[in-house]
Length: 499
Image 1 (tube, rainbow, N blue to C red):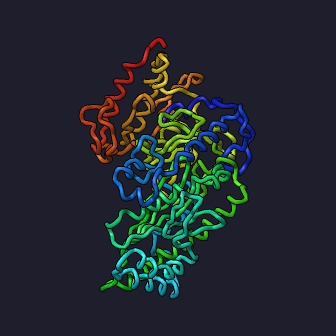
Image 2: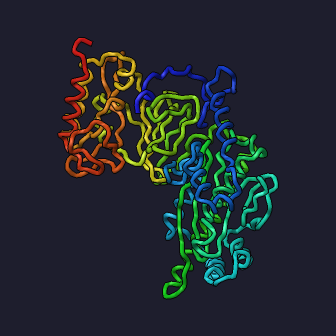
Image 3: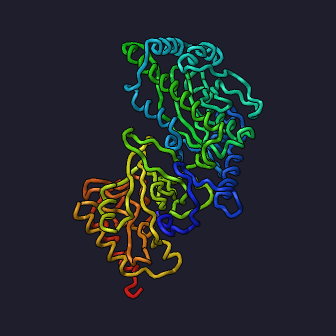
């Protein structure tokens, strides 16, 4: 994380609309958002899978092309991908309900629907058609909405999903079914291909700027139910939420109630998505706002900062006017935004690990950007909002062949001492994580994903051993203060006393 924290005048500030999440500017030749608009079109045009859903899941070559091809646009955790819930509150609500099923309230009628489904799902059928015919009515009743079963979509390459649920022409849920687990392919993967085929069609082109097509994907095989959620932000990101094997036996009562709660969560989600798509149909949201996160706090009592998103940041932390992929080898998502309360530029970061205490210690001493917010959001990530710093990373200074002043190592050493006094190891004092502010002749440290307690916390398992580390720094190794001191010595060797 580097250049995104610097150069706040990278683009001339435009008047911001309060209460929105994106700068509402025309797609003029002078506007950076014209590039984003065109890049989105290009990405979505390439989303449509080349083969039919059944052909894709029946061939390992086609599956590999879909998930690992040269122009991969579908991410479902392998090799990577962002949590879909951070982009849509309706999907976040579903994830929260499924994560806390004991809090989902059900009625006697809900339990009856679940009982009907369980009794039908556990039977052995001669083929998929027989199983599908048996469960249709109970599934529609449990979800609370009649689906379109086996309807050929001649406007979407003639695909014929087992069932789709719609609202005003928008897909809110798709189900694919297999008669037996392990036979005839993965129904959830087939639902993903359905989704890609549908949302990439011409009929949705006018809505691509106004929504990220949130959808629930359901795979059914025998007595197993797989539930995932998906969004399209130039790429398709799929998050698996639940795998449930419905059984009877000694625990039949508990299993039926659990299934009833799962169906209730799906029913609530289809209503939430109907409200969302009703707004999309009116095009009331700012153009391109759906490409940026709209997270839901884990703690409902917490109010997230009001932001107006402006730009993406690359993995190196540099501002860009085109889409930034969140798939392979990405562990964070970063953006430039304006804090609506002040209109000042901030950096917004989503990451699985963050040390708020370490950041605040250094920010209070002037050795880190001011931290406005740090909290958990649904999807398992931290949302971090901090000031954007008018500075350049040491990495960028090295690229530009600019000298690194000695004051940098002096300030970083003071910052490390403050952390060590609290028994905290920073862990990653590499050049991209140290910024130099020329106007103030000072250094600040950024990227607090790694800091942890000395001899207690561990480095991420994803640490790259190929980078320059002390010999005893290894993936998932214990964090030691001596590691910071080793990196400080290297930093001092890079600095020029007379710069």
